[in-house]
Image (tube, rainbow, N blue to C red; front, side):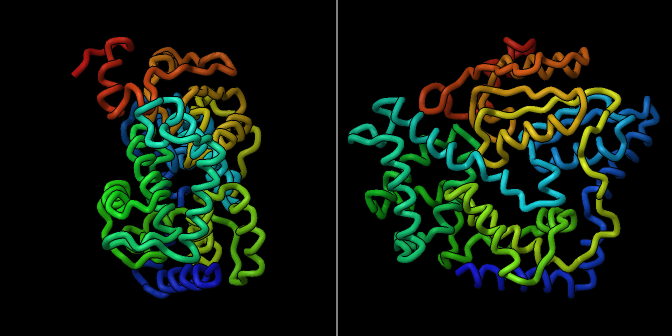
Length: 379
């Protein structure tokens, strides 16, 4: 199946390169281009010429790049839910997946700790036994997909259902119900839960599900990526690296990196300046949760080390981006940085104010309830 994924990735890369319009657009969407656009916006404002920026996820790549290209023009910059720019430009982004398996463990542990509200509470389950069951079902679905209503649940579909939920603890109760249905082969529950977790996706084609749609993110990532090969054997160490990073979501990342390895569109500009010991005019604030299923806390630590004087603020929580698990401590630290230019002390770890399975069902409702504690009125 890896060979088939490689072939389809190469086909997509070739198709984009052969289309004149796509090829022209694709040559102009690198992050370096966007960084220059950001500074042109600053110039157009005709103020102090300084950039104030808050970027999450890919936005941290843009933020790190613009800070590296224009360090003397950085005012307040927050990098939140951090991608490692060293890997983005020169590696295979395996750090993206490094918190995925621990995040899955955290879901099981938080569920078991919640008592009767956890669908696994009735048995002698442990985190280890649930993890083993999950990977056993993943392997079975790879070899013998599970038929449930209008869905063929193969390994890719399981990843499609699970991966986004690692980012958002408010969805963990729904995810654990679906996993329990999957483990017990409850066909009705599998069908309903998958529809909810996948955003109503109805394609029944299984292993190739999830293709199509907006390819702009692929074009940007692949324009920036430095690693290129048309030889699957040369790429094989990358497969091993990503698989070792995560058994849960590794296959998703492998597919995206296969496209970039075979990408044919050459960007008109690609940032090649590196990210070592960059000194910005004002220090950068970096944020991560203890576990981030999409971009690991290790990436946040590496980025902090790349910019002189920057500080890493951590939350004792889960999810992708600071809003994923509300914390008054985190919000106040962000306010203080933007209002007064004051960074939190190094090694600061903020507690969170809501807990999955207990007092949070909607993250925006939870934030709204906390607004008075950070100086705003609730809506």
